[in-house]
Amino acid sequence: MYLKIMPQNHQKTILIAAPGSGIGKIVTEKLVKDYFRVIGIGGKNSKEFVEILNQNDYSIDFVECDYTSESSVIEAFNEVKILTPKIDGLIIFVGGSLISKPIEDVSYSDFRKVLAVNLDSTFLMGKEGYMWMQEQGGGNILFFGSTTGLKPSKKKMPYGVAKAAVHNLTLSFAQEGAEHKIVTNAIAPGYVMTDRHIDELQNKALESGDSFEDILLKIENKNPMKQLLKPEEIYPLIKLLLTTDHIQGQVIRIDSGQILG
Ligand SMILES: NC(=O)c1ccc[n+]([C@@H]2O[C@H](COP(=O)([O-])OP(=O)(O)OC[C@H]3O[C@@H](n4cnc5c(N)ncnc54)[C@H](OP(=O)(O)O)[C@@H]3O)[C@@H](O)[C@H]2O)c1
Image (cartoon, rainbow, N blue to C red; front, side, top):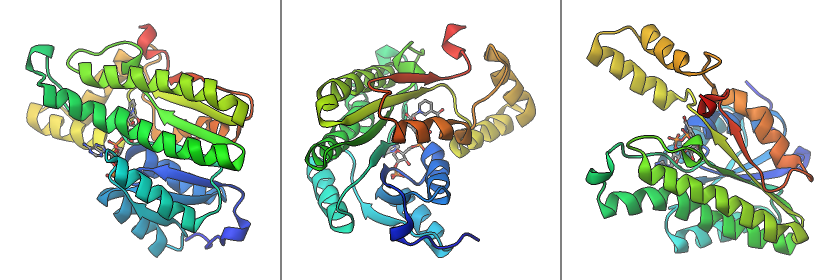
């Protein structure tokens, strides 16, 4: 049980897109425990998770949003502006590879869908956050890229293309935002052991007859440092990038050297 933190005690206000699953879920809890005021925007999962946190004496505001719709994103930001006069930070966790297919099987609609969830959402919310921070005299924006955007993975072509574009979006936001004191960076993780990945591996274990531990070991062994990244291990970097004035326009890879082989 944690003490309910009142808004006046909060150090900084962070707007989180997709606080309800994976890396976002763990980071949201950690930011609240670190006395940040957190406002979430997102879909059903995110809403349910924030409701659970609030039943446990947290205090997180939440606004529903369809990340890939321009009008929904603009409306959501207008609602957030009623809740807070300013945001110090914006983190966008929205994304995922969604499909795993060789190029010849990727339809145009598959391609557009993956770009919409990963790139359009980041542009739409990033732009709203950027314009707000321009008016308020600065702030920190943090996007989520991926090592797949740095080095392609087989059967993940649309995801790699979308994340490579997110990396370039980061550089443009940093380049144009610098004179407005807007700091923009991206984190490019390798494989992260989120709840979703754990579920997927458990299903794989059931289907293959291998033990969950053996499957984990096989994945660990593919990493040069023989280790897997947990969401909470990304948190110190996230906190740094939400508060830094000097790290600007970086895409920071966090993968224990995975793509170096
Ligand atoms: N986990 C990894 O191994 C890994 C590795 C490299 C990069 N990343 C990137 O890091 C970020 C967070 O990853 P994660 O694993 O924590 O993500 P996740 O939990 O799988 O998904 C994050 C959120 O994105 C939204 N989302 C996902 N698919 C969607 C769809 N088809 N339509 C609409 N919204 C969708 C959902 O938001 P709502 O719940 O609000 O609906 C979901 O909660 C993502 O950008 C991901 O690409 C992850």
